[in-house]
Picture 1 (cartoon, rainbow, N blue to C red):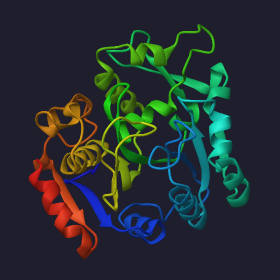
Picture 2 (cartoon, one colour; picture 1 turned 45 degrees about the vertical axis):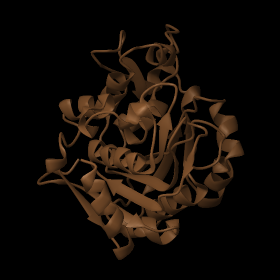
Picture 3 (cartoon, rainbow, N blue to C red; picture 1 turned 90 degrees about the vertical axis):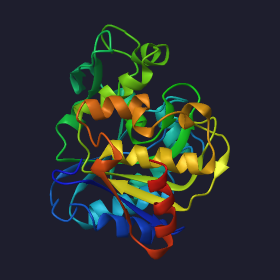
Length: 299
C-alpha cells in the first residue's frame, strides 16, 4: 500500500511482457536489494497455461530483475489443483530455476517449525503461513486476472495469497483448505490471510484473463494490460473493473466494487484503499489512457 497520498495503480497496454514489466518496475523500490532475500509468490495453482497460471515470461522477467539488482530470489508455492512439485515441473518452473539460479520452496514439503501461525477472526484455528515469508527482506507477488467458481468470486492478488498457506497442519492434521472452501465467509477469510505479509508490489498480468468460471479455465478475454501497485486492495479493485468492462459473472458484477467481500474486508483491515477517492489510476503509455478512463467510470 502507498505510504502517503493516494494508492497508485499503474497500467500499461502492451503484449510485450519484457518491456512492459520493466516499465512498471521503474515505479517501485527494487534497485537496492543487494544480498537481500526476495520471496516471490506467483500463481501456480494448477498445471494449466496462462491465464490460469503465471506466464513463463512474466516469471522470467521478474527473476531477471531481482538477479540484476543483487537480490536472492526464492519462489514459494503451493498448488491447489495437483501436486505442487508436479505442477511446477510441468509448467517449466523447475527447469527455469536451474537456468536462472533461483530457489524453489515447495510449501507442501515444509516441516512444523517452518510454519508460523497467523490469526483471523473467521478462521477456527487461525492458519499457517511460511516462516520464509515472515523473515524475507522483500516479498513480491504476481497474479493473474480471473474469476473463481469455487469461492472468493474472483482470483487476483488477495486470493493468490491462499497459495502461501499450509493445506493441512503437519502436526494436528487440521485441513485449512477444506475449512476455507466450505465457509460462507470465504471472502473475509481470504482478506485475513493478507494481513500476515506486505508485498513490496504486485504485478497483475492481464494481457489475457478469464471473465467467467476460473480459476483454471473460462471465457477468455484479451485486455492487453499489465497492472501493478503496492496496494493489493486498489489493484484488485481495478481488476474487477476490467472484468466488468468485458462482461463477467453476476457475483463480480453486482453492487459497488468496494462492497465486494474480499475488497471490503481487506480495506477494513487496513490493507489498502477503502474507496476510489483513495486511489489513482496511472496510464504509463498513450495506449492505456482510453481504458484507464473507462476503468475510472466503473467506480
